[in-house]
Picture 1 (cartoon, helix red, strand yellow):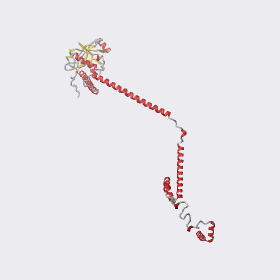
Picture 2 (tube, rainbow, N blue to C red):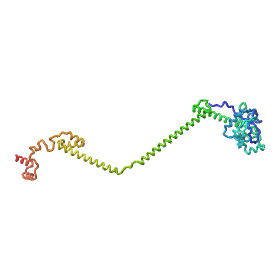
Picture 3 (cartoon, rainbow, N blue to C red):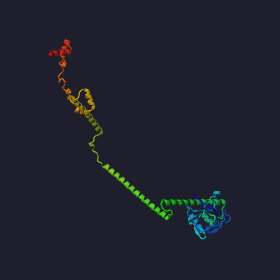
Picture 4 (cartoon, one colour):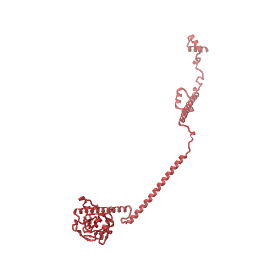
Length: 367
């Protein structure tokens, strides 16, 4: 859990130094022990600025991203109350701070109006606003003002103190984040906890080099894969373009092919039927097939079954064509019963006989 117990409660003070335009740096805070001018609202000193304390202020200022503003009569602190503008009288380069034997110095760029006012002796003092600790040691430089009355009231002092507190919180947060990032970085790089900045930078450089090498390998592989794909496409196109064209004279339209196939199927069926007729007649003649019912049965079995039957069926002599149990002779009771001619039928009619009576009389006459 983050706390700020190490930081003292902000105390804000102002002091006054004579000011004049110069090409040299301007003294911002005096060295050693100094007091607030009469009328200062927050603290009367004494304050103590040593070289060590000045270096801490210089380090804080170097971390600023913008110049430190100078105004007139600390109007920046009163603007929220009185609603008046707070024009800048100049700008202090925070990276120009320098410790000298007699105090803290910095480079100020004055506005034209402020420079003219200083030269005209309209403003005589430079008043810095700074926080300090319980021992009266200045901790930072918040801003400065051209003034003839280097004292601020309590409300403005509290506002400056609040701004100072925010500044310290931000710096502390940044320092803590930097510390956490450093620890995470050391862990990620698999370095010892006490690794120096040079070791960390070296490990990062190695990691970047490996990453670059891996990226180059990946790009090389991608190029090779692209080249292979391009070659494969080229080969395929070449094969397609150079494939032998089919000789269409060797082919017939599908409709014609289907028509011929239908004819062949019809002819095959007709041939099969003719073959079955031939085999059945052969079976009848050879005495292997008897009666129309058995013929229908054999037709239903198909040609293959019929052929098999013809190979294995026994010959029945009584069924062979031209052979009967009477050796081809009509039974005695049927002898003479051949069909009558028209003349014989006319005789039967004239004599009042039936054809059977006529046949019987004829047989008796032949006996």
